[in-house]
Amino acid sequence: MSDFVIDTPPIVAIPVSGTDNLFPVRRVYCIGRNYAAHAVEMGHDPNREPPFFFQKNPNNLDPSGEFPYPPRSSDVHHEVEMAVALKSGGTDIAQDKALDHVFGYGVCLDMTRRDLQGEAKKLGRPWEIGKAFERSGPIGPLHSVGEIGHPDHGLVRLNVNGELRQEGDLNQMIWKVPEMIAYLSEYFELAAGDVILSGTPSGVGPVSKGDLLEASIEGIGNLSVKVV
Image (tube, rainbow, N blue to C red; front, side, top):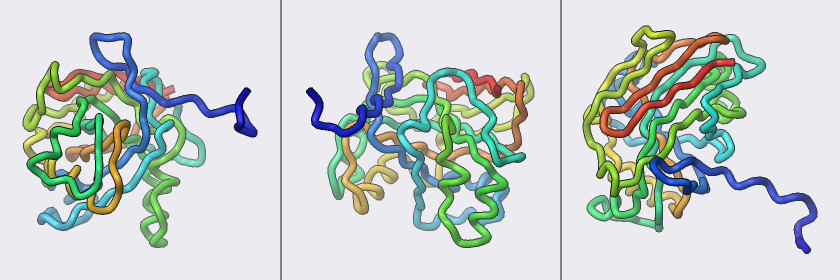
């Protein structure tokens, strides 16, 4: 008999490539403007400034391969990103130990209600209304460190209906994975199940119902998502 007053919510989980196992998600941290060209296209100085993060909800991550166009927006954008999944955590993690906490990597989309995010920015308000809506994080299977190692370079691409929209390289990230983990751990207690979305290259743009989004990160994998 359960002590909870309502049914417990289901555990959000991501498939693990090559296995029947699942990775349970605890928290989702997203770094903003981590590629210089994307910072420029969003109207910001690309010089290295202290990193900043926002969060999605765990149940925003969705491995179904479908992205329902969300309500209350007419300008929804794609952002292809590398997802970093942690197997352990802690506080004040040293950069040279940070990668020891990584379980694996995957391809993810940070779908954004850009019009609502823009309104929030103008008013100095949080971004959740533009970033943390239902199924706003389409994600592919995770690939373990034992399978692919720690990718620090590799082409990042996104095609929409066969047309190249975004292209960059993991080596263009302003803040690298060890730095992101170390920085976050100064402000939060990281733990197994945490996922970090590591930023997007330039070329973000709108999607429409019926579009086919095909994302890939060299050395990690592919993700195909239909906008419905």
